[in-house]
Amino acid sequence: MNIPIVRKVLERNDRAAAENRAVFAERGVTCVNVLGGAGCGKTALLEAVLPRLPRALRVAVLEGDLATTRDAERIAALGVPVVQLLTEGGCHLTANHVRKALDQVALDGLGLLIIENVGNPVCPANFDLGEHARLALLSVTDGDDKPAKYPLLFRDARMIVLSKCDLLASVRFDVQAVQRDLRRINPSAEIVQTETGAGRGIDQVAAWLEELVGRTRALPVACGALIGPAPKE
Amino acid sequence: MMHELSIALALIDVAAAESRRAGATRVSRVRCRVGELRQIEDALLREAFDVAREGACCGAAELIIEKAPLRAWCPRCRAAFAVQQWRWNCPECGVEGEPRAGGDELELLSIDVEAPT
Image (cartoon, each protein chain N blue to C red):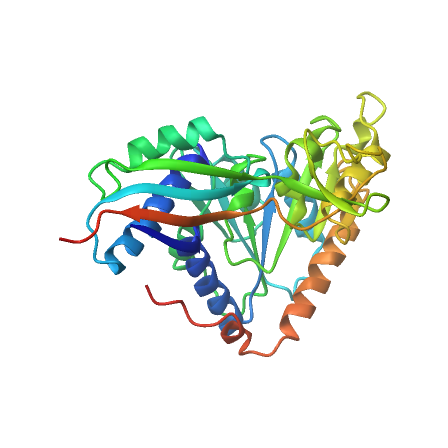
């Protein structure tokens, strides 16, 4: 007997993500999911951007890693509260990982929660964590073929950072071709070129985060309910 | 672990829930649709499915994977085409296609169950 169904395979993760989103809405927290391959400069971007955010905006970071607490230590050195999430071999964070980690985050008065996902250009993009927006990175040393190779990474991002642009002179990276490829899958994302050493583009990323927090706060408090109750099995 | 294992586990979860709802205990076929954007390798998904289904109701089920391509629209031919290998030009006339939605599907389409006894 054949039973036609059509159900989303990742619906359990999507449900947990909706629950996270409801927690964020209730507490007035804006959540950003930062994605990109290993070594593309996710932690370096946070190190550059976090000190530029206004003090009144309380920020915390969830650090997703396969192993080691090195990235978390770099964030903690800035005086920003950080929770390390070790996936122990898992190649991506799931909404459930985040839900469990939320117990360790002081959410009262928190304005912005940044989740640095596991360094991996493929798997994390498949899993909604309950974030309000995604920020995806592509470093110029990764190569200009990456939007074509990892389109899902960039498709749902609201901001795309082209990092390590100080190295543009030393590598073959066609910025225009990359922008054209990115626009095919994502016509609306803000695309920023950054150099963390010289500080180029960092203010733009900080301003985007601040604006995102403002826009999320302007949503009605009950917006968690817009997502709707979890479907019954 | 690649994401194929998480996805295989989730697929079996949903298939099991549907077979329970139908009052069946054994699933003989699981059909799913996977968009190209998901970057799920058939071979890896099959391997993961073999590992993940152990002891589950899908123990002997055949896995059928339908692929859903990235799509574009040719303004000259007024027809949709599949974007293969990131080639955005219409295979008929060579004009650059306009991106269309889709390619991100990840769905359980149907299950075949043995009728409850």
